[in-house]
Length: 150
Ligand code: GTP
Ligand code: MG
View 1 (cartoon, rainbow, N blue to C red):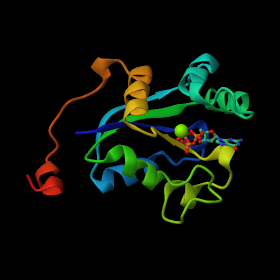
View 2: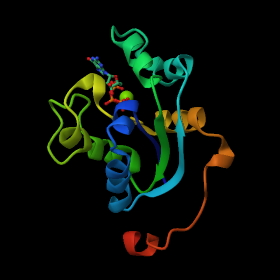
View 3: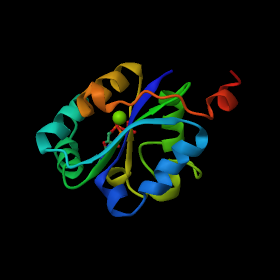
View 4: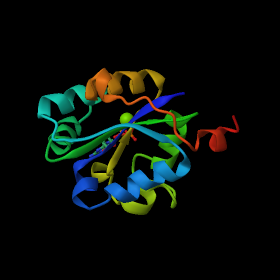
């Protein structure tokens, strides 16, 4: 099954939205395979967002990501990379649909509370950047046969 990297950014943690966000992934049926609370260094944030280094907001974005605790997670499930992004909603909360995490819980693009990998390659890279292999927990979830019918 596919895995994706999801992080609740410092604004989401400080606003007390951890349980709200985790519960949306959990209720959907995705399986949590890794989770930890970390304050990333600025240099680590720059690595995480390295694809955006030419953008004008890059420095502010990396300062922000390293400004406090981030809840780093790996979620597993069929189609979780793409559908996880649907649950999250459009990058700018002004354009995110109601019902999405950003649509329901955020207002501006620079404080959009959550990150999700944007494809299979980035998911793999981000999981490797944020977690050691032994931090990923392999287990069978009781609900799997009900979720997937097998
Ligand atoms: P992530 O899941 O955080 O990677 O967001 P995304 O994939 O929806 O968007 P993208 O990777 O393009 O941008 C990464 C982050 O940079 C966004 O989540 C925003 O917080 C921030 N960002 C993107 N565009 C802008 C912008 O135009 N202005 C500002 N201030 N921040 C931006
Ligand atoms: Mg992105």
